[in-house]
Length: 255
Image 1 (cartoon, rainbow, N blue to C red):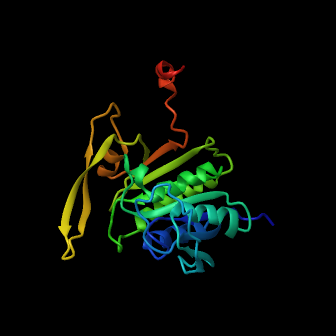
Image 2 (cartoon, rainbow, N blue to C red):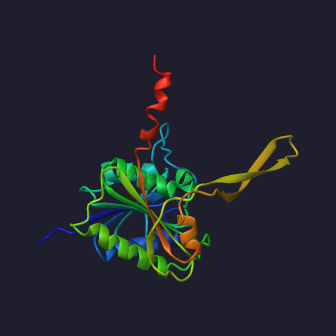
């Protein structure tokens, strides 16, 4: 009997989120699944790891999957722990999500969801981050589940081979999804507004609230534009971020 592929799933919203339960349900229809996810929200942790503290781990419930673990650690911690410790065999695929909120454009650099997929690619796994442009904890996941299922089917197809060091970043619009299209990440930045408060003890507190500002680029259709038009945007991202085109320019610094 042929052994089913194994899918390792994590996220940055926490093991109890609706998004990861939806992804686990879809994946379990197609493969064996192990969920290793943070015990709470770890959004914005990017590729951070825990160095000085232990990774406390407990059994949890997620999408009906029998092997599910909650970890007091970052999404990348969860990938490492799942890959090297908790999974009893090498995963075929690493999935991160379904994130509550999009991770288009430069958000891919901040996102713990994307950071986990990037770690999967570094480990040599076929890896995909999946996000839904709906921040509500009660977001409707049905359209996102259909998109995730279609992508998982392709990634599990033996004839499909992604290049080494490549991760996929998928962003799904809220509501109706017209289809899946490939797109470059939009160029933009987050413009932050700091909110200040002084406590009765004289302690200075700040909160940062940001608004995304897109910058015009040469790409006619970006991930941001696609989800605004009702399409799921799929962006291939390399973990090697070297700008080889600038290597010649950098020779001015050589001694």
